[in-house]
Image (cartoon, rainbow, N blue to C red):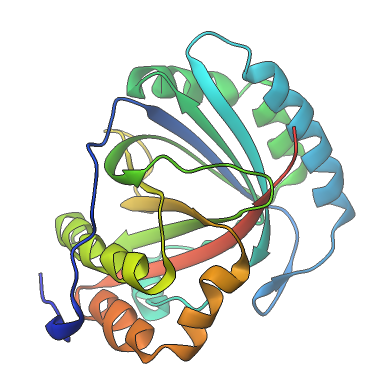
Length: 247
């Protein structure tokens, strides 16, 4: 791992990863205009179906939480050239469903079921593209608080070396803790045999856009440290910010 501008480096304060497993279903349904998702009747209809299905899924044994999200913003990222060279499509998912389970095994079993189940059928009928992945927690600041009024990040990371990415993330997450007051984040790593387009996916939250967006635009450390270290270590970072749907 190469650490650029290491005088800005602060390692993230972490807690043990815990035993939870996760299933993420991320879908590309509507279109984007620059960083903003365009209105979409198809998306709106799909979100209604997903919210109803999520409530039923949450009642199952081994399922601890099901949360449905719609995208509101794609902030600045890094690594478009890397994605192009490696033939990886950019992450432009405007709908996401995150299922927390009792363990990684339960997440893997649920992944097999969702392809033909209610969630999978709804996504297949409405989305141009669906990314379905079962994961374990590779690192954790704290479990993400899914309050309805928060804003939620999924950052889809692709890297030449996932080990280096995990080490770099500890420092970039530390920067966000110091600069934005980031208090919760889970780093999801696909289970063996799962799709590897994204070596890890970071999930986090803030109380509002103003809690973190000014730091991305106005603080030079974001580009000089966060994006510079992604670039130096062959990491493509593709952040998407979401709101959760009540349910």
